[in-house]
Amino acid sequence: MIVFAVTLAVITYVDRVSISFAAPSIQKDLGLTSVQMGWAFWAFGWCYALFEIPGGYLGDWMGPRKVLIRIVLWWSFFTAATGWAWSFVSLTATRALFGMGEAGCFPNLTKTFTTWLPEKERVRAQGIMWLSARWGGAFTPPLVALVMHLVGWRHAFEIFGCLGVVWAIVFYLGTSTTRCRTPSSTRPSATCCGKAPSWPPAMATSPGARFCARGRCG
Image 1 (cartoon, helix red, strand yellow):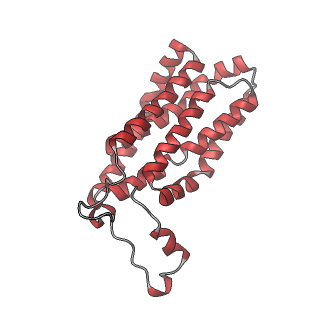
Image 2 (spheres, helix red, strand yellow; image 1 turned 90 degrees about the vertical axis):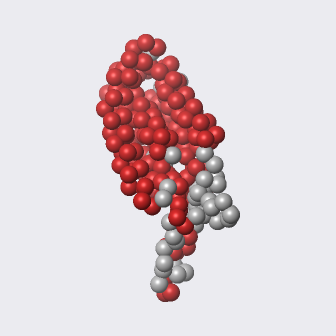
Image 3 (cartoon, helix red, strand yellow; image 1 turned 45 degrees about the vertical axis):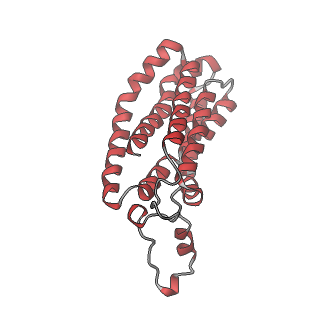
């Protein structure tokens, strides 16, 4: 699981920083002003921030594996679609939809660590993932610049979108919804998933307790 998390962390940065390098070419080809380009950046940033919590909630409701596959395919499509933009409105809408999808990435990766790894391994996994994310942010800009120089910004976004699709396919084939279950039971393993929180009797039926009880391993 850690390999998948590290790889996806790097892909998120590739998809995220690519527009910074493409901005001058996008402005020239689409006839955009610096202010309009700023609105496109703004659309991504705000949608990313607004959909962090809803994206994490989906992981609690549906299971992080299902959500990760769906959101990676979602944002990969809109990464590629950035290269198909033809106007200010189409570019801004595409970046907003891209931000909505990518927002759920790290909450759901964290959820997979919580439900798929033994408790003593979770902190190390988080450390490796965030270390990789930061190194990815440092090393991906030269790669992005090279690809855009070779094939142009439109085809570069299509290539970067394909990275996420490949990741989703490999993740789907390489993981299982029964990953976090004991051999003799269909219930989640307490060792792997952690024990459910113990609530005081007065709080056992509270919304918070019911919300936590819905967390799934799938």
